[in-house]
Image (cartoon, rainbow, N blue to C red; front, top):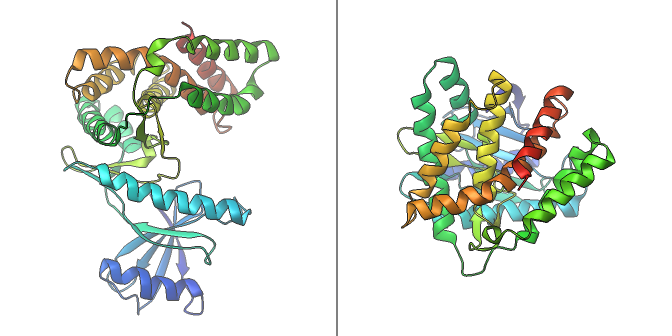
Length: 330
């Protein structure tokens, strides 16, 4: 998570005053000896700030930046993530944690400051498990992640039923990016596949829950045992629980397909994750059956989402599209 050292925050910078007097005292530091800045490996304007004297760190995320120069949009995104974090924290279990908010400041380029947390990301767990030929490590952490997500989902459930049209709207947004790799005939075929899911009773029958909304391997940290920490909750939303579950499944497929070239290599881990998630319901088998009926739609949607990444080579992106097609067929 921590990247290159950039330098020190100037004492003449309003950011220094804010961090020193309002933020660092919350983590037991006063920053009087200076504040060091580090890059992160994320795609957003996110930095690590470190008190030189104590080594205490916090994370600063700027919503108004070169990547987002619309101040009003940036302000809304700042307040949305701030509120999402605080709501998400209400539903955590004993082994679970979400980095707490330490402050927000619209005048400092819409800055959100949260706790710095230690742990190993799921993408590193995936790599370590594969390279060390240690599948048990990945099984254990997927058990922990299933527990984390099921806890938040179940505790945040409301009587309001899922609106599958909301998921269809997300599918449409994903297709805008994926369509650059398709001709019009294939694009229209995918849209017909989406329409076919509207008549599937299972996608309408669950309750809305609070989902992470961006459940990718880089957004979860793992400690010992079942301990899971999450962050980056800007996209948290109330929708079908399988919005998160299907994304994790697709990310597992993407990792193993890209790493091994074997489309079936991820299946034992996906099956394990879904079965472990289902164990947090009174009727495990019934829950598993219901989830498995809905997963293909969200699985396919997320393979299309991943295919939009231009850093992937075209042949592999096309492979993801073909796999999405197979998943979405009913």
